[in-house]
Each structure stands twice: as structure tokens, then as C-alpha cells.
Length: 466
Image (tube, rainbow, N blue to C red; front, top):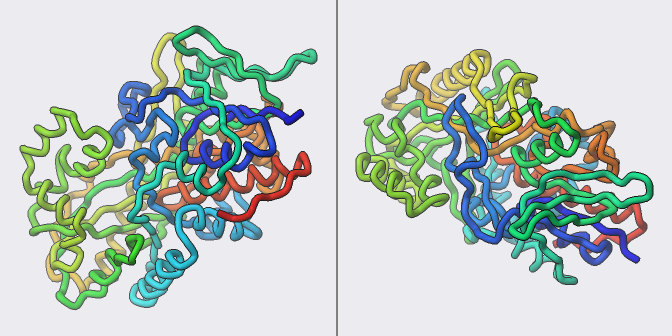
């Protein structure tokens, strides 16, 4: 008889793990709803603007129903900060890339990466190599395409808690749905509910209904300036390179006080700052997540400059122009005071504010960018630092750190919940650090590793790469 695996959450990691494990275990996926739409009212936040709906969604595939599939590797230093041993992790990154791209597609993207590095990495900065496949993938559909197999039962509902095995009784996941509470028994529970959902499930399972799930970090993002570049500026060549199947975008990375800041250039119409200030500045992601919101449509009608520049960005028509907006994403330090707060009788709340020390690091890194590329920049219009309007980037990370054992990432203990035998975590909440942006590729690599370790535990063979 196969061992039973319950997977909480059918997002990026949960979808892949279900497909990888279903022929070796009796897998059941627990997903909060059938609809594919962001949830707008799950978490309160009064410390800064959240990315629309904080990128939480329901339905198979989770946020990948509208996620832009931005793929980027952490370097060895970032992996070490995240708690991952860099040695031996490369094969899992290889599998993660192959989950999204063919070998030929990846080789083409790597050629663009090498050209960008040759053009830019001459001074204090390095290049952030980001790949966006032109075909957006729903993770559930893609995982089933890559690893077909037995049907996977799905239980829809809200997970109240995980109850560990005791006195000969099996562990179970208590799922509250329209018909009441359903109990899903399992030998192993994989919690993949995301950097906000997972700590809530774990805290409530451990009887911590009044707790701060600390260590949260993200990539605060803000538009800080507009620039006019020289016609022959090398920055134009690296801002966006289109291959047959993907876009390769190069960010410029600076490190100050062991925190990274990445600078991205987005095409603009002119030097006016109206399009990068106010609520319409992120209209592409806002409308992608909630395209029929009257409130957002009215915002757009009040800022046609932002609409025009969004069209330039979307069509890539402006990446060879002279005017650009300067967008930064910063790294955050996991802090014991920053995280998801649970309070009995209230919705969970998120505290993600940018600290003065982090702001100082970002400011110094932006100054380094302007100094290094002074010869490329003909004009610049910079917002005062006090007016840098940060927004959460929805790369929710670090919130499960207090719950997991972590003796080493080459064993199941790296993923194991300390006080819930048989429970494991695989999502952004397990990352102690996340470099400068977009942890999705790293999470896919970790899902491959966790699946491999679980199969090895019961002597199952490793499936071929995607």
C-alpha cells in the first residue's frame, strides 16, 4: 500500500510536487477554491502598499494563473544566506530551468545573458539575469504536461490545522469546506501555501493562535527617477533582449551593507514624473490581477501618461528610445519584528515596512548607479528619497523559519517542521534570504529536491528531467 501524501496548496511548488510524487505515493492536493482569481481580503496591512491582492489566488495553479514567470537564479552568496548549500544545488536549478524552457530556448537566453554581462560588468555593478518566457504557464497544467501520471484527487476548502499522528492514529489535515470539516489522513503533509498562508497554517496547527510569524522579507519596489540616455548608451542594449521564446531583462545590481539593490530601466515618454508617482504607476500588474475593477480603471483614466508608458513597456517598443524610468527592488533583512501577526478573532496582518537602514542602503546603491553611468545619462529627474513610494513585490519569504529544523538542506530535515512530525514546508516561507528578486525558480529547484528526498526515503526511482 502506498504511503499517503497530502499537499496543502496547488501553487507553484504544490503543483510540481503533486506531479512528481503521484506515481510513488497516494497524493491528495488540498486547494482553497476552484476559482482562479486573487483574494483581496485575506490579510490586513498598515505598514505599506501591498502588491494588488498580495499575489494570493485560488484554483489549481494558484498565482501562476496570472504570474509572469520571471525566472532568476540566486548566486552562491544569496543561496548561503537563504540557508541553501550552493555546492550540489546546480542540478536542481538545471531541472527548474528545464521545467519552463527547452534546451535550445535556454541556450538562446544564456547567450543574451553573456552579452549583457560583457556590456555592463566593468565597474562596481553586476547583472541580474531575468528570463520571462513569452508563454505564460499555469503551474498545475505545466506540471501535468511534464510529468503525466495517475489522477490526483483534489479536496477544496480552507485548511484549519494539521494534526500530527498520535497513539497509532494517522496524521490528518482538517479542511473546512461548504459541507463542513473534512479530515484528510496522511503519512506526510507538504505545506505549500505560500509565504503568508503557510505560517498561518503552521502556527494554528501548533496552538499559536496569538503569535508573530517573524522573519518576513520581500523585495520592496519603488520608482525613483527618470533619465534620458545617450543614443549609443550600452544600457539600452541590456534593458530588454527578445529571443524567439522569451524576454531577457538585465538589472544592474549594487551591494551596500550586505544588502542588494537592483536597478531596472523601463521605457518612458519623457522626463515628467507623473507616470511614476501615484496609484497608477503599476497599472500592468494591477490590471492583470483584477482587470474589471472600476476603481482601477478610473485611476488609469486620471493618469494617461502612465497608460502610454505601460503600452510602451508591454509592446517593448520603447526599449530602444532615449527616456527611461528607474525602478529599484531592494533586498530586506529578516527581522524578528517583521512578519505575519495572528490575533484571535481578527484577520492576520502583515508588517513588511522598509527600515531606515534598508532605505539608506538602497539610496547609496542608487547613487552608485548614477555615478557609474554618469557618461550614459544626459539628463535625470530624481525623486527625493522621502518620496520614494515603496510597494510590496509579493515575493513573500522567511515566515516559516521559526518552525523548521534546518540542520542542512541536503536532508529532509531542511524542510521539516520541528514540532509536527511528518510535516514539511516547500514555498517562499522557507527562504531565509531571497537575493534581489523573483524566488520562483529557486522554489521550483527546492521542490525537485524535496521530491527526490521523499522518493529516496522509500526507495523510489527519480523520474527523468522535464
